[in-house]
Image (cartoon, rainbow, N blue to C red; front, side):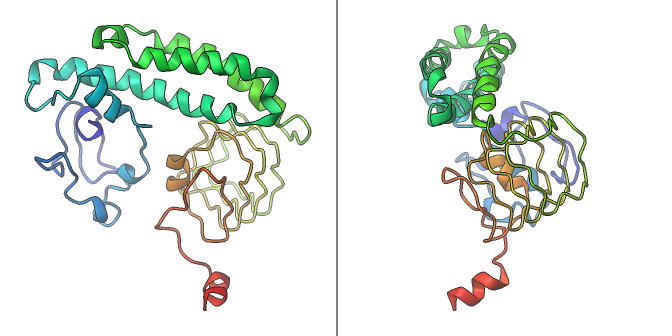
Length: 260
């Protein structure tokens, strides 16, 4: 679904242009990527840092009951629109599920559970019902809860508010960013080597090419796998337990010595 519905432009992330609704040239007839293991080497780094949060599978297998856009082209346009909405709803489910695991936000757990259940129900509607969801309004409502969650988690370690700041290329090596508000912050190519990001709020932060070598992100909230995949780190980078160290991150010299 992602390889068809989404557009991309030739850039450092994608080798070619592709309009929305047109299958990627690398998509095979069995719906698998023909260059999956060579995406970075062939100029498709953008594919390796994208995450639909399971929306593609939900739309294909649940909303459309296994119907394929290839064999049912009359529904393809609506299917792609439904996918765009479902992807946003699934992203909210990710954040809400994480918030429900945070002890500091236990006073909000009832409201967070209600928001999670309501969001999940929205993803289970018919194609017409999902297409009719006012996703912008729903995101705004959920964001109020996520902001309150963030404030509770960061209450005892709060640092200056960098929300939405332009920190592109900034030298923040070794910075104490515990509890920092980095929501929507532009950290593209910033140097966060050895930085302390424990309990920092990283929702929507742009971590493309951010250097996270030896950085400590344990306890950082609302950090996604896609953000981690977009950054550069190593085996000394400490991640939340729900996230996986990207395979393209190198092994540090100290780790090699220990392993040997």
